[in-house]
Length: 542
Image (cartoon, rainbow, N blue to C red):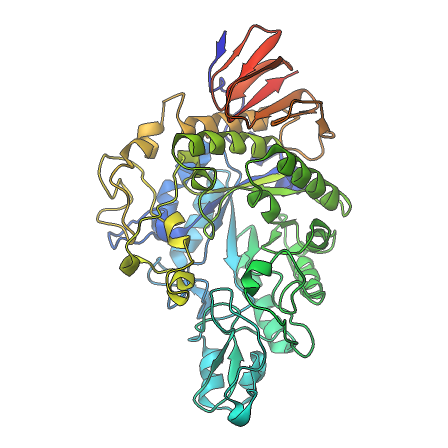
């Protein structure tokens, strides 16, 4: 027989959130909302907090446990809000503080927790602190940032050879001749965490949002707040390509862990529990695991899984090493396939029908693994990367600073299609800040709802099954056991559950591991053998 793509309803939409207890994050599915591109309530073409609030029922029906909101604070938007000028206020572009409060309350009423971004590595150049530092070179305000004299005759050369992640030097010169450090855009000066004022300010900021009711924080550049003593030269170029692969004097310094331990104590002082999620790049899985020791953050993003190619040998290696590293410190592993900084995985896996098939299969693989999973808005719709945006519409500073050679982040930030056959597809009353493709109508939430073969219904069924089957997701349900499988195939079991992934471009016949309950493509089985479709993943009840 041919098994259908989706499964019957097996769990209520709120079962896990209400019964999860103290360790809710250990197997949570957390949905990233890129606020600018999620839903627009006022017709200015830019998503906002009221738009997010109105669309929360979609996330509750999808079956996620928590929502992570990208920055909505006061900002000049030089880097999509990651250049913060006021950490305690909502930018009028997105609403006001009452909108944030109502959003949190509405999410909680639907059984959804709320995680917000905090950006501690740098501020906006328009932050009052940096304005004060520029206005008076003799003021102590410069000690809150990294100001240094230049090298060479007259100090016309940067203090060292560090490069910005967005391209070009990591230093800019002020009119009085001093240089300041910015590991990202010049509009994002790095803070000096050796200054106690910085630590005191961020403790206050965290308390402000915890008092408002948020359930945790995603820590932007959690590996970057501390720089190596003396800020030594690196001695080579293309430094952005070394991030997460080699030790660097501006990232993953041991001193960051004292900051995270202090924040963990703060989080633990609130009822909840409230959690911290580290966006941390480290050269090895073992170094990454340091961020989730029992007295530090609750989670850290597993970028090695995101960067893994469509290759079962590489996938198995990353899965094994990730699970071993986090197990060594008693923490759950996280899994993620896309976010607001990378090319969407439909496109990374080849694009078109093949890319979509692989993306659907990868989603089921990810959701079957023990630990917590992160979904990026629109992946439940199977959205591809939009790679043909006109240069004059792009807003990514990485694109602007690299003469168009890099910086594809705008292509994964296209506003979502909710309904209708033409742009803006229900995103808002008017247009959208980045143009939506003319052929996205069939990908909208409305178009896919009720279609058992759609990517949206596949995600809904997968998240429902993940709640219902103990062997899915929970890191505490039992071990993951690999079984022998042909080349190009992954086969593992957990208590009461099995998962098969066929990465080959042709069907493959295998003994049936059990009873199929969900597949990313129709599978043919007579109960004894199964014909696995190409580029597919299937879940089995044992």
